[in-house]
Image 1: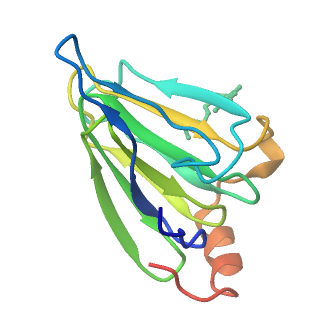
Image 2 (image 1 turned 180 degrees about the vertical axis):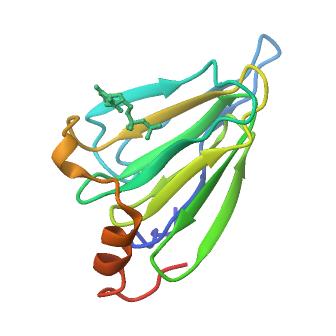
Image 3 (image 1 turned 90 degrees about the horizontal axis):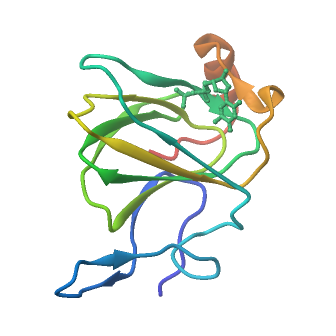
Length: 143
Ligand code: TYD
């Protein structure tokens, strides 16, 4: 597999085991998951029009997968924004630390699986966009 640029958000194709009984996808490190998995959480039952996220992380790397339905992930590096639509259970969006993200446009029944590299710690969050922008603009753009 070609090496990934771990400084920027990007879609990663995950292994897909086709089977007439139903398909199967996995994420492991080493492999398509570019960090050691420490924690998983999932977001579901999102009412129409609601938005999740709205923060960045100081240390935590993450992979998001639409294991059901679809939603948009809007990412910002402090300079510009980019939107990824997730709607395939065999595709992960890698997000390195230092990237602001919001999640919106959830379809009915959408489930966002989040695989992450660290324990939960509120101190790892930056929840103020201006504070984020000030820190992020000290680094080169990655989007
Ligand atoms: P948050 O990460 O802000 O949600 P979003 O994905 O929309 O950005 O988390 C929402 C709440 O859940 C917050 O009070 C912290 C809590 N939480 C945990 O206790 N453990 C976890 O692993 C996560 C991800 C969140």
